[in-house]
Image (cartoon, rainbow, N blue to C red; front, side, top):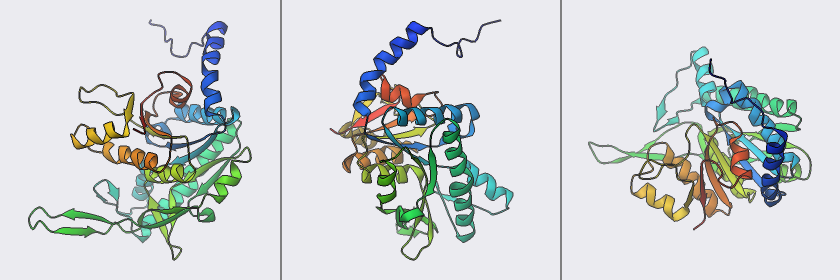
Length: 302
């Protein structure tokens, strides 16, 4: 039988070498804000979820200020199916009517948010679960999208219901947490001018929070290795100009476009860099932040 070496711990000298090499990167990031969008299949894997919680606690213990923003699309879909509420999508966005938005809030701000906070607390951290409605953290407006009719060539306005986008991030609560040992875990639910609830894409919410907090890094945990270049190889680093060119050339396409655009918008707003990273890789965040070669694709100004 072949021996599984994936769980064999490194020896003491190897451990010491790893810590020694990581120390300069820990110093570099100490005192800085890192916004992590947590989602994808990593959320549904108990072992990966446990490692994620441990890594977030480690970041806090070495002096970094992590802010976790999470998704929950599959879990929302499961709950809607259980409640026999029909749901549809337009261009990848869930059409969110009044009945659906109640379920979205229940799942995101309730079940998932508290599970993630509890996992971080179990790992030795001090996490507090929030939604964007708490302290009016995320003030949102209705998301408006248009689509050109292929027959008439007329652009039509799409009504996505209670789907929103951030208009303003009120950082007061998050600023207070950064003076303490609290790790905020944010559900991407926004509040409208009349108190209505809006469902917000988690990547978009994380990017807006990273920009408002002046974060050093935005980490988008996904289900792919990162951005692939024209040869199909992983691009370890990209300038913002490189990323825009890959979009224009059609190399970056499909669902990767909004993720890269989220990164570009955050960097334009002052975030130091944004990383698209495979959340299915154990300790991917630590590899990115504390090793020379990182993990995933780092997009930087330039």
